[in-house]
Length: 87
Image (cartoon, rainbow, N blue to C red; front, side):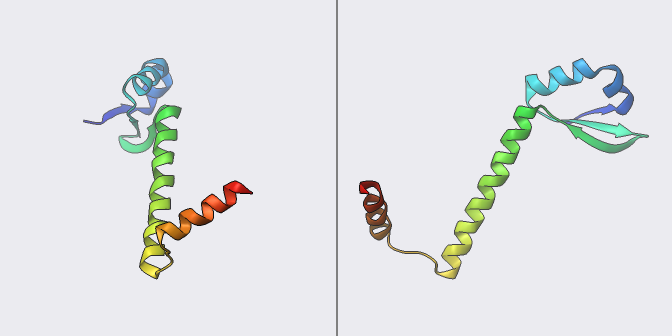
C-alpha cells in the first residue's frame, strides 16, 4: 500500500520521510491541497529505476532489430569479437 503524506509533512517531518524511503526503497507520495503532487524516493531507488528503464530500452532496440532482420549468426559475431581481441 502506498505511503501518502502531505506537503506540510514533507516540510515538517523530512527526516522521517527520508528514513522511510531509504529503509524500504519505496516512494512516498506527497499531496498538495489534497491532490497528488510529487513522488519522493531515495537516490538509490531512483538509480535502480533509471537502470531498469535503460535496460528495457536496450531490450526494445534488440527486439526491433530482430523484427527488422538485422541479425547474424552467433558464430559469425563471436568470430568477429575474437578477431578484435587479438589485435
